[in-house]
Length: 101
Image 1 (cartoon, rainbow, N blue to C red):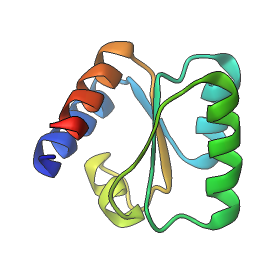
Image 2 (cartoon, helix red, strand yellow):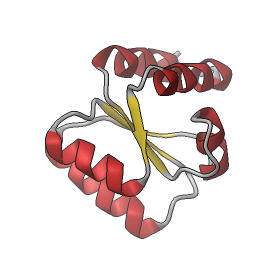
Image 3 (cartoon, rainbow, N blue to C red):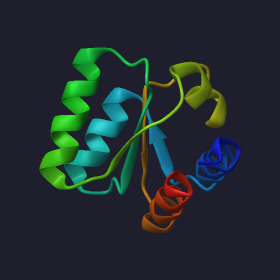
Image 4 (cartoon, rainbow, N blue to C red):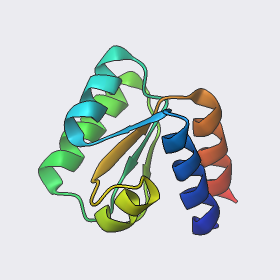
């Protein structure tokens, strides 16, 4: 798994407006059926992790545990981000390919 390529992919998705971040925005994306994949930081709180994982599982959304909150935020041009949702199936497919390689 090449983390630099994944960072670049997330940055590109952010610039394209195809990613949302933050617990509230991600929960809204899951509920609306628009989330194609979730990225959950390794150091997110247990409460937030359980909430997001439960909702993602119910909708069949793949979840990737990548980065720390600081690193995920940096990928997105923000400070800290605990969770993010890719809103585009193409970006989600590419993320899956990069995680598996």
